[in-house]
Image 1: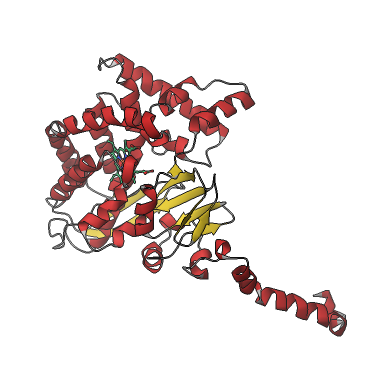
Image 2: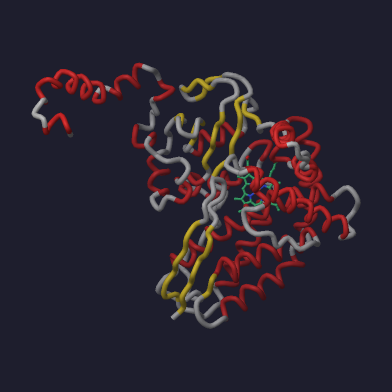
Length: 389
Ligand code: HEM
């Protein structure tokens, strides 16, 4: 500004031209520096904020544009971002990508702060999602067996869940659907499966997966895991299955809650201005609230014209799967490969029950209001208000 006021612009002209020239040529520089900084999906994709993408109101259009785009590197988060569902599926099955070593990270934290996190160390050592190779197979197998036997027992929660839905939708006045309907439903299912109360606040048990978890949040999480562990030990379940059930709650509850909430929000938004017992012809789909998965590159390798170096973070986005044409393709939102979701049939069963029960309610939806919680992994609402006429 001072330059213009003093009328000294002529003196600075060469420097200004040089500066303008430099900035105008930035895309050229990036091109010369190679593909690493040049997203083949285009600069619109590169300008995205990967952190707010899962709750961005335009996310459907963004994912539609990003179809077939190559991974790009986000310099602020220092990780690769993968939006294209085909690339996500291929990378989830690629054993050159592995889970981070959380046990080593916790050990380092204990050393740095001179504390002990025994309950966290206990549960992370049994979480399939944080394990690799042979150890992963050892912890995944009993969980898969347990959940497939639970499938036969879904009858034991169906009646209770149907009653919860009917009574929430019969209440007069505004329904705060997240706290009054969805949270109780998901807690009831997990209590039925694990035989203990799991009424922890949303997003507390899954802090372990969040890179932005503060030290205090991890210490709080240590306390929550201790409580869960003690409840399981006192519940009379077969000895040795506490770790598997604690892992199940940690991996499944927020996944189910966020997904059921995304799906319910979509349902009431579609039904705005009409009665719930006059639902649209196509039954509203189960949408995933699990926004991302992450891996670390174990070795350098090339993929889709991109060269990954060893030890890089790769973030894979799931919401692109919602836009795919067939139901089978859309199931990709439950992950693929060795870490694919073990709770898929439970989630689909609960959602179809919910759709059927909601379609019995003689209520006219006047307005819907919602706000998302802050978070990276899940699209979790803080509230969903439904006003009935
Ligand atoms: C609609 C609800 C759900 C969605 C969208 C979902 C999604 C996912 C996804 C995308 C993964 C793979 C993550 C990765 O590869 O990094 C996963 C893993 C997993 N999910 Fe789910 N999930 C849901 C519900 C559940 C439920 C209800 C349970 C348990 C009852 C569950 C248990 C698991 C387990 C144990 C794994 C880890 C498997 C392994 O690492 O071997 N999920 N889920």
